[in-house]
Amino acid sequence: MHDGTWYHGAVGLTGAGDATTILTSRSESRGEAVATYVVRVVEGPDSGSSLVVDGSRPGRVLVGKGLACDLRLGDAEVSRRHCAFEATPSGLRVTDLGSTNGTWQGRTQILDAYLSGGETLRIGATTLAIDLAGGPQAVSLSEAMRFGRIVGASSEMRRLYPLCDRLAQSDVPVVIEGETGTGKELLAEAIHEEGPRAGGPFAVFDCTSVPPTLVESTLFGHEKGAFTSAVSARRGVFEVAHGGTLLIDEIGDLEPSLQPKLLRVLERGEVQRVGSDKWVPFDVRVLAATRRDLDAEVAAGRFREDLYYRLAVARIELPPLRARHGDVALLTRHFWRKLDTRDQPLSPDIVARFEAYSWPGNVRELRNAVARRLALGDLAPEPGGPGSSSATRGSTGAPPSAPEGDDLLERVLAADLPLPRARQEVLDEFERRYVERVLAKHGGNVTRAAAASGIARRYFYTIRNRHGV
Image (tube, rainbow, N blue to C red; front, side, top):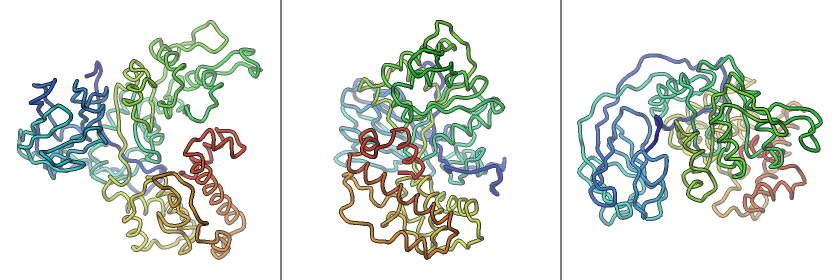
């Protein structure tokens, strides 16, 4: 239900890359055989509604009460994002999205399953009938292994490159959703670089890294004397990005008091600096990224529904690395070539161990693991083991009960690194462990963790993000 055009998909990222990567794009395509299904509401408040799911559009489609759902239901017992469907060569994949009341087939609760047609599902007070509407048809699958600087050869990604191309050539606002570490900012930059605004600036405003008192002036600019520390006039990011693209990162964290002001600026195409009564026109394409479920934020009253509609003319969902089949090995080799300065061999055993890990920190964690392996060799911790970037993470967020079982200084000294690089390895590892521990101690609250660390929240965010914590 939307007054614009919705583009849905799940785009995976490398988290890093450059124009010199040896992977090349190819314009040829090959087909996948994907059947067509119809999801029909046969019982419940929305009885008679239906949704076609086939291979004509990439990624999964959403069912629920939320604004982003393709099949939007009025059932009070259905969650805002209840479940998702995706047509695949293996059948119609249905995934429950952590719904309150679950997705059921008879007495069996479904978390993730493949359907073949003829089944009925129960979500809340709604019954869905799954019909096979057409046999397998070949669906074009790009043979390209990259989109701009984004590298990936999994079918999950190659199915989406044409969508990325279309979005890059358009000028519509896009909301990019995904877990931490999936590369939302890199995707936004790739969309900018592959589109007609590539010659213009690419500006980023991170809603989590600017002190609350400075968010408005950073967004919109300010005049000299507008407040105590405004010793000179300053352009905001909308003026800085004029003629190009502005990424508003972590839009879900924007203060509620500023959301109506942002909406007004987007609708007018003009910005008013703090302390000024003049409106300055701008020409900017706006992209937004978030790790949050904006549907849930709207339901909780923390995010304005009209601002969501204004930003989410198009939506891209970035899958976690664990859902990008085959890309762990590809990205491991890619990062190894990119980061290796001593022509060290990459053994198949390392690749196999990396492929066996789930990578909760996504592509950023993988890149850091490759960097550690290159620096420390066999002394590098295993992914998920003591000393790795996710070793101290637990479901409870509690700090580790015992010291990590390795001597960092001895490991770095044994690696025979040049002094500057060895010193940096020690500093990086210390910062990572410190940030993980102080975050765990304060229940993941960045504001309290930064205060306890004696540093500004913005600097704390910089350290946290640098190490993929």
